[in-house]
Length: 157
Image (cartoon, rainbow, N blue to C red):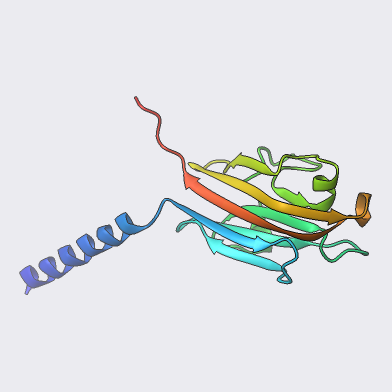
């Protein structure tokens, strides 16, 4: 009986390792800058969650998006964005995809960010963004956001 349990356990362990080996260390997510959803969520791995939150202003529904990487499980008390290089950061940041940033060329349309505390990097690419307006009245008209994530390769020793 013990031998059968051991064999079954070993088989489960090998199967689990096989599934883990098949998990990709990278991924992508694309969406329109005028997507109507308020939040887009995608698993990066067992620990990290990619959250893209729609930001709007009083006058503009398509103001922009806040790209976040957070630890799981996510709730309002764990909303620390691991894309910020510091917990004390204030002001515009490259993980924010806002129409006025595009209009003012505040950030490049392709940005790469490290996930603080984890061996991942994230690349945000804006494809053919079109905006209208100025300042806080700027809004997206069309375009695509494509987000890539990839596990950093370990440095050679």
